[in-house]
Figure 1 (tube, rainbow, N blue to C red):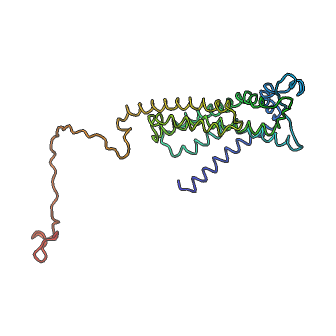
Figure 2 (figure 1 turned 90 degrees about the vertical axis):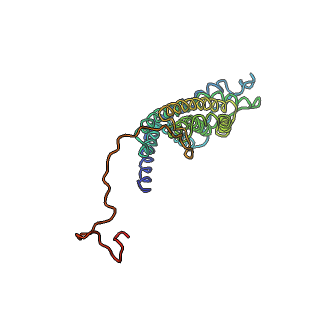
Figure 3 (figure 1 turned 90 degrees about the horizontal axis):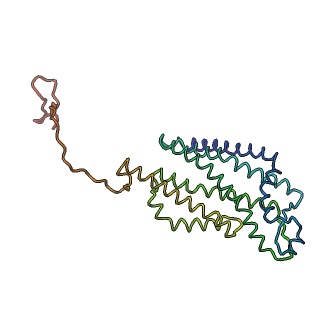
Length: 302
């Protein structure tokens, strides 16, 4: 397709993805209080001041209370909670639209793999989002523990939701990295052996990414993000190595680079029976009965 058609197709796919997210967001607005309670419940159970600041301070315990500041804050919180819910729950739709945009450029056998990649991408994204939800209470308890004695800690709900949103998006997208590596391998761009040779660099890069991407910055959340991605990376390398072995059995020259010549088979083969072929006349014949026409002592071809 020309460039304009590609842009039009991209616009349609983005429009469908946005409409799906907005539809889920509108439904989530009706239940945003229940969703907000579901998000904040683990943190309230881990660091909530159930007995008040005074009694907690007397016992040497650090706690926090989630608060809402301002008149417009509840409305902003509703939008944040609903939009985050829309992005997470509509992930099957926008991941499928991403595949549908790339599908016309794939061969028939590649489309079969692409469907499997989309089927694996949705659980990976949701798994990363759920892992961030599980690690948030422990991270909050660690951070609240730095509060000085006899001091209270108030957590604005909108700031807390910003942290939750970033964690969900970062964890969900980070879990798609192994899937991206497998797609590059199935597309013939990178080999499993090369990915395995990069493991030291990849581990360092994943650790740095976890340190920068996690909004809390505590070692627990960083480790909770980095360790699963490292394990998924090695799992993806294993899948790539198996695929390379299958590809070599099917095509022994698949691993050769573009500028590397394949080995030649110099074994002589038997020559079959020679088929007689009539050769055409070397010179065009003239319509004259006396033979080829000659001009200045030369024939026509000369």
